[in-house]
Length: 137
Image 1 (cartoon, rainbow, N blue to C red):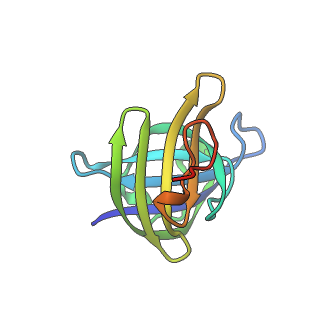
Image 2 (image 1 turned 90 degrees about the vertical axis):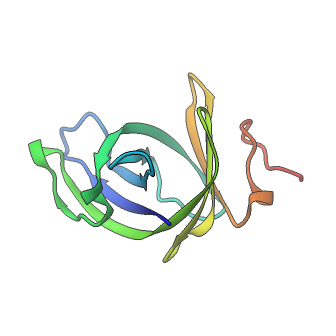
């Protein structure tokens, strides 16, 4: 199974980016992690803005501590495994198996202005469509 980690990234006061949550996803094809900055802690029944970040090293699957170049502090909050369901350019969905995050996650691109959204639901039938509306399937 592929691994994931969720960390809280506390940025310095003078940072251009606010403190946020980082979701790290292990990949099968490379040794780097797909990484997304989330504006709120993910919980089942919520959806949050997501910003794709550059690939990170695998050490972030288990790292807590100071970051180089005064980028702040990361605190590991959760780890687990995930199973990809859909893996397309503008939409990804996967099942998360963690301590608290045992759910279906869907990441989708909305518009250039709104960017990416990540939705967390109990099952795929409870998912949000790319419009942000709850599925009735």
